[in-house]
Amino acid sequence: MTPSETNEIKSDAITDRLAVMRAPNNTPYIIAVVCMIALGVVGVIAITLLRPTDDNTILIGGLLGFIAPTTLSLLAFMKSQETHLSVNSRLEEFMRASASNARFQGIEEGRVRESDSRADILKSKNEAAIDLAIAEK
Image (cartoon, rainbow, N blue to C red; front, side):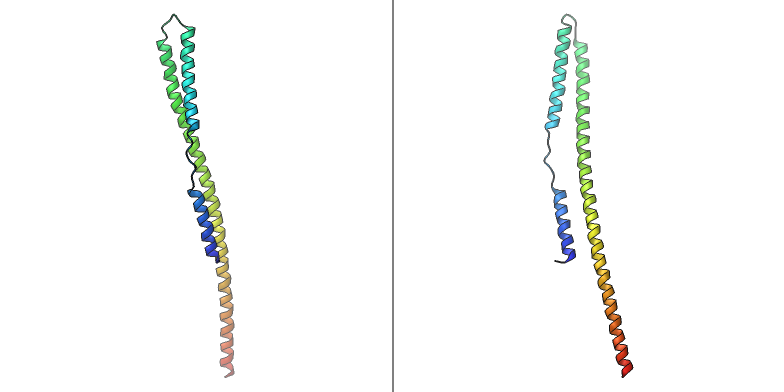
């Protein structure tokens, strides 16, 4: 197997690893939404129990007005963290792949230079032999 074939095989293996993506896991989002809904329900029940004779519409509206955007902000934050982790892991894998690729390119270039220098040495020896043969005639 030639070095370039080895390089292609390793490159294909890295590409295959990069192409594999984990299935999306929505469980943390569902848990966050359920917890925020539960917090809202507990808050409404607490307000209703603590102030049974008063009109609690404004307080309940304020509580729900606070819970809804907070839930959306929490979901946005969780999604941004997931995206950040995904990008970082792919970037790290890409950096490893490019370092490996650069190493194999360097090895291949070294082999080419070595074979070129051997060819130059053989060429100079061959030219010297021809010059010697011409000089002897």
